[in-house]
Image 1 (spheres, helix red, strand yellow):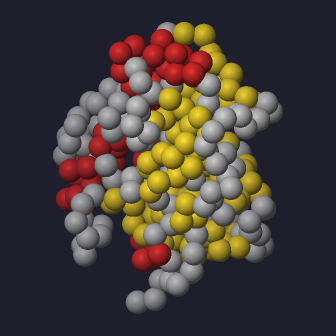
Image 2 (image 1 turned 90 degrees about the vertical axis):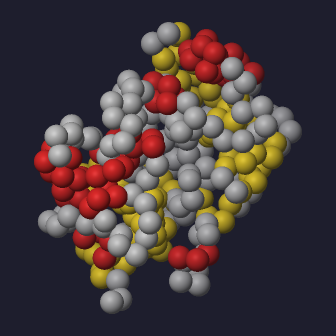
Image 3 (image 1 turned 135 degrees about the horizontal axis):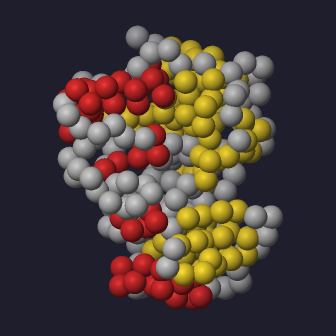
Length: 282
């Protein structure tokens, strides 16, 4: 099996960046979900509330996080940590310490998104704070992450996407691209839904090992076109995923596996890396 895509999402719920390689860190790929948008109540805001966030492009240079939108000139946010008081922000049920970026970013978001951008501010995860991953699926271990939904890595496979798209087309629906699922690591194997039976993925030379911890339950972000923010069909692909019932003991629509890093912190992961899977215990 080989890695066919690597994606990072520096700002939670804005456009992702496809990369050829990245540094593996315990909390995720380098720069992944380092920033997040919050409302006036310091609660996280995503495409679930504002699909238009999908239209904001993100880039990284040696010195800046660059935000771009068709409605306005791009904005450079320094990678150097901002000065200011720590802020307590909420992502799901977690309270995290964060550093607020300048008010210039808030003004830019309002100019780019109009009324939908009002009241938003950009915060950066405070790296001296640890946000623990739920312990239920860690087999007695521990893991942490930044502003991801709950786990440092999301792994999907091209084979499962092909199976999903075949089911969508058979029902008269349009196939969906992988970016609807916002994965970090995309693997090409030889069997749909095989990832649901993997315990670990190990690079062929042992450079890193990932543990697949929990099936990823999908939300309405999968219905949002990640280029235009349009919702072509508010029921799909969720309805078809539920009908495929790839997780018969669980309720909902599932695609991909949440993962943590077992070995290889600080090593480089690359598109083209060959992986070996170990099976879960029966």
